[in-house]
Image 1 (cartoon, protein in one colour):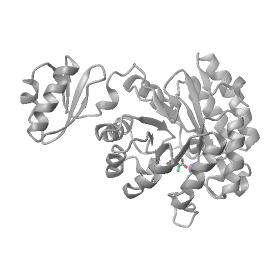
Image 2 (image 1 turned 120 degrees about the vertical axis):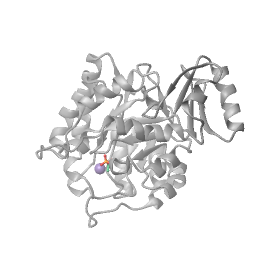
Image 3 (image 1 turned 90 degrees about the vertical axis):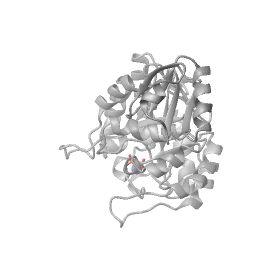
Image 4 (image 1 turned 45 degrees about the vertical axis):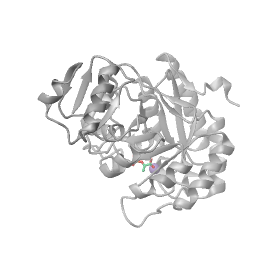
Length: 337
Ligand code: PEP
Ligand code: MN
């Protein structure tokens, strides 16, 4: 339940009183409006309505993520801002399949204008026979590779027990589509100070995505970036159907930044540029693109990986589309080394 107050001071007073009574609450007094999320052991809505300074009590639903929709929230990832006028592009291989290779890819995508390096170290695969990634031991080398290239790093964390190890090494913790409703994981991520990249489950609605984001936010982590990565449809010509309607809808419903992953939607490198340009035109706050220096040798998702050349071309095209909708890339292409 969310309780909206007329001022931060009444919200703070109510929070203290409820906490004294053993109620689990989260106070968001710095936002507009000031809000208290009553998470557990709370009194009923009538009793909450009677507290001093209460404007409104909102019943369950995806709430925190929808507060002040329209006023964009900027999420900072190691100095890279998501949700502002400039769009960061996250790029890199699906998985770390060879460290030297990742280093080469990292420098190349940075030179092409990427703002963050992505690479999975523990992979969940549709079938149990595929490459599962090199494991958590690859986290530190991945972080060092990112540092050497000057890029913050994002990698997918699969379970609660891995959160600390990942949070030590990566700058942005990715929740994969298959894990979007792993509630214990989301709650655990709510207790880290690292920002979270929450990918939409391919069978999940926008409301369910916002509900998942609320699990992270209500557990205390305000830094969530949403990611549309395609949903299951009747169309089998593509791996998933990129849902640009969801992007447009999310823009009306939440102030959290929304990035788009055209690679996992397309499942085919030839389609990635069109989807990426469409996403930027439709208001995406960033992109996540799989890139490999030798896609044929990638150990996961090789069909959708862009070559380094294709990625360079994509960045030029995407910068033009961004300019056409009054935005830029971060970093801006002319400042690239
Ligand atoms: C990935 O980013 O490599 C990935 C597995 O994505 P998703 O969870 O969207 O399938
Ligand atoms: Mn992948």
